[in-house]
Every structure is written in structure tokens, then in C-alpha cells.
Length: 489
Image 1 (cartoon, one colour):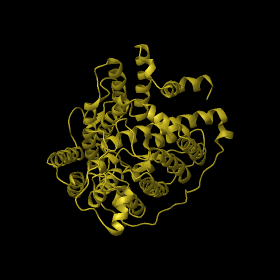
Image 2: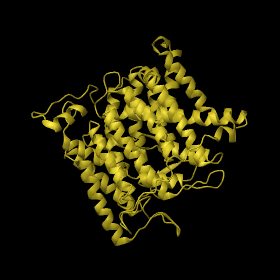
Image 3: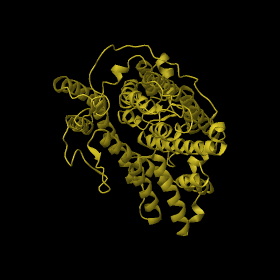
Image 4: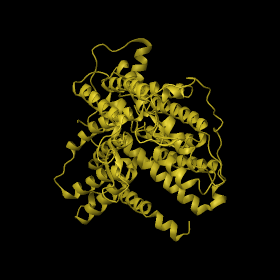
């Protein structure tokens, strides 16, 4: 896949107000058109919409140190609001088709590791501090310098690794790949080695239908696959009444993993936005400055490099990256991404960041920030239509992730594997992401591997000093557990 910026121009560019919008977002210049951008924005929303349900499940399920829990409806409302506002802001400022929402790595970290030590408002205060640090790094240009110090081979490896990662996410969320509960093998096919549930079968049907449409170059292939398969899922649920996997009645292995494709009750409800501004910075007093700073350090590292990796992968997939892997308005994109963390903390929706599911919209043809306007507006509407938003089952959305993951894998052909000192760090980057379920871990393994293998192979002169510093930071990040234990944190 070429690394040059797309510059194809349609024969008849739009005129008037439409022309000014086209010029601002560079729609024609990037070889796109309004219909494609709208379609791409819709597809991105459909593949991201699950976050409006999943984020509340994660955040509202964990009591803080005082036993306080966040309300499901409250978290759902602020999740949709923040995602909508940040997606639109990023589209207008950075003019790139990258959707925003609450990052799954950080929200899980908050729910599992942070609120056992502090209150929810104090945890969100740490998220705000994390965001302010990232904004400062971006505004001063340091974040861009780090981004540009990364060799093109690693940038391409990040793209490929993310492709495998999101495909793995899709396979797991669909129940096609499941945990065995054993030390070896840790994962397996379906249930006891076979595809045994109707929802997983729906995933396979969606994957085949969408894959054929993409292979035949049908316009709107991903959107057609998502909508058509959702209709099939609604019919299946109406007939078989499968229900959810997890409910008050217990575990139902044959049920839908997250969203049940049915409409129940009222479709419209007023959002509860009472969590906005529920932020406190009392964690430094409650657990001590050193312990609080270690939590902030983890948040910054995860936020910083997850976003960097995601934006690298998406810009390459959209053919907007140059020969060095950099993309248009890089500094603006990095600043706004930091603002997403601040906004997520301020609204108690957790740090908002670039979503890798945006690759689905890019796969549909989105190339500009205009697609973000569509995605963002749909998120704002979703505040009032949570039942309708949740009608797309995870199994259907997961098929789109696998398709996009396959598309991103194509970047591997542009990596020169003739030197083993390149091959090993690239391999670590690609392999560690899906195997540890973390973009940041894959980037860290690649950075550390690149610095050590290349320098010990006599190629130290070609390594940027910034890359040495970042690799050292990752070493500290990887061993932070023992460090915290030694410090009694």
C-alpha cells in the first residue's frame, strides 16, 4: 500500500458553500467525496457505538474506596456526550477521520487498579492531570519529536500489529476465540474447540457477507454488511429468544456477548449529565504524592503511546502518511488527543482517545474530518437513543474489525526484513500487541528491542537520542510493579 498522500481529484469539484467545506476538509484533494465521507462516518459510529454500553459496564461495576459506584445511565450519557464532542473537535481541528471515545485500556485500569485506592472523583482527577501533561508535551512539540524519532519500519510494524490486535479483539468479542481457562493452550476455538452458538454463527455470516462485498469492491460494503447482518440478528433473536450471556439469571453461554439485538421499552430518554465536573485532586493527600505520581505515570504512558500507535496505523491505512510515516496536522492531532483525556476526566467518562475502530470508516473510504462530523453527531444523538444504539450486537460489529484488521495487515509488504536487527524489533511490535491486549506494550517491546538489538549490532549511530530516552521510559514502565512493591505502594 503506497505511503504517499492521496491526491486524486474528481472531475467536477463542488461549488458554493459546499466548495468551501470541501476546501477546508480537503475532501476532493484527498480523492474522496461527500457521500463517501458520510458513509464512512456512519460506519465508524456503528463499529464504535458499543462503547456507549461497554464503558458504563466497566466503570459502574466497580465501587471506589468509599463504596460509591457510578450510575450506569449517568456513565452512558457522558460517554456518548464526550465521544461526540471530541470526535467533532478532532475532525474540525485535525481534519482527519479518527473517531474518539473512552479508551478501553484506561477505563479498565481505573476500575480495576485505581478506585480501590481513591474515590471515583479523585480517579478522574488523575485522568485530568494525565491529559494536561499530554497536552503540554504536544504543545511544546516534544510529543511530535518523539513521534518523528520512530523509524519508519517500526511505524509500519505498529500498523500491522494494530491490525492483528483489532482482528483479535473482533474474534474474541464474537466468541470465535475464547479463553480455555488452562495454562496451555490459553485460548481456543469457540466452546470446547467448536463454534457452538448462534451469535458466533451470525459473526461468521457477517464476516463472509462483508468480505465478499469488499472483495467485489461494492461501495458501502462495510455498512451494508453491518446493517444487513443486524437485521438478520434481530430476526434471529425474535425467533430464538437467545438473550444476553450475563444476566441476573446467571451465565448463558449461547447468548449475545454484550448487546442483544432487540428493541425494548422507550427508544428515547433524557440523558443524565450530573457526572460532569465531578472531579477531585485529593488523591495526592489520600494515598501520598509518590503513589499518585506512579498512577499518573502509568496513565500517561498508556495514553501517550496507545494514541500514537493508533494514529500511525489509521493514517497509514487512509494513505495519508508520508514516506516517514507522518501525517497532516500532526501537532494539532496530538494536542487535541490530549484534550480528549482532560475532557474524559472532567466528564467522568474516562480518558477519551483515538479509536482504532475508525479503521472501519476508513476502510469504507473516509479520508477527512468531515466523516468525524457525522460520527460525532450520531454520538450526540445516541445520548437520547441508547436502546437504539445498542441494537447492533457485538458479534456483528466484530466482523467489521476482523475485515479492517486484514486490510491493515497489507502494510507488512512495505517493511524491509533483510536485516535481522530490523526483523526482531518489528516482530516483537507486531506479536506483543495482540498477545498482551495492549498497543502500548507492543510499541514498548519494539522500541526497547530496536535500541538494544540495533546498538549491540553496531548500528547505534542511526538511533535517535529521543528513542533511547523513550526506550528507557518503557523499561521503567514494564517493571513498575516491582518498583511500586519496593516503595511500598
